[in-house]
Image (cartoon, rainbow, N blue to C red; front, top):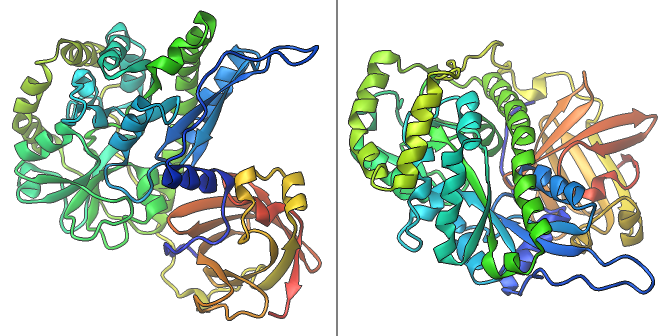
Length: 488
């Protein structure tokens, strides 16, 4: 039960709903202000709003947690996800929105800062192709003085650099062809996020980089991506192969603040934000390791083809991108990062080992011929907003689609969520969502794939009732109370 299908999402999570509403309305988000005294009590905490283009707040949660811990709760961070949804250039939009004061904090890939609108080239050293190719080396580079010095380059934009966040290693996914040599890249249309170094790298290899809307890879010969992204978005479906020993660069991100909002904070609060970014780094590296291992396991089960470049091809690629290194070296801050990476590579684990599958792909037997899961059939639940609040729902989940009665039907690796009395296979009145599921009976986990999102729960059965518990970010409506067997 591992086939995936992206679909429209019916049950809505609070963070997603809030961020869509805020982005579409163009509303002003709260900015830092001096805390007000509560009558007879301690000063009220200062709340900062952080915007991210990711649909899951988990990437910034270690930072959020560290801020609250370091300030004893006097400073809190509210995360708004899915900022500027549906756009190919969402990262530059996030940068501009923080500059304009629409949010206090933002996080984007460092790659987005060297576009013409901003012209910050200090971060380009992190993206030198085929240089930072292991997590050990990435950690050492980000912890160095050269990396820290790059944050000052944001000041002319009206931003304050908070810290650098590690990211997964990006690999070339070949869609129409393998991408493991200079010859393979020649003439290729290569999907990537916006950024001048990505474009220069593809140009040096004879290809063309194009910025595409996430989830819409049609017409691409390949793309840069990391393992968990490929697995979650289903980019491997129909792809030729994934380069197993060819790391392009890490997806390093930068946390930054609107300078005016940052200046309104006390020196102690400013220091706490920057220390929180440092403290979160080790946590994120551990999480990334788990996420990438899990992504590789899922890709291997789906039967992804891994293709090795080999050292001769890798050397040819390095020689081809030599002009990109010359471009990066024009910025002294970026050049210092590259030099630091070269020096640290000699005392680190260096090149990451080639990825490999350790288990056979899942059986291609149609799910209709497989043994049905114990969840097979229809389940019904009715919830009120008051019950959702008691279960921990965010205010943004106060959405008509989440409240009332729902039927959740499982058939093989498919699911439908709809109103009682509606037709489960249609997208007409009463339709809420559909997609695919991966049901693991051994550890009683279930992963819903809907509209490009991945929601993981554990499940338990007792007689004719089915209960869910959240493992990851996901709709609260599913965990409010047990579902009961239904004839729907």
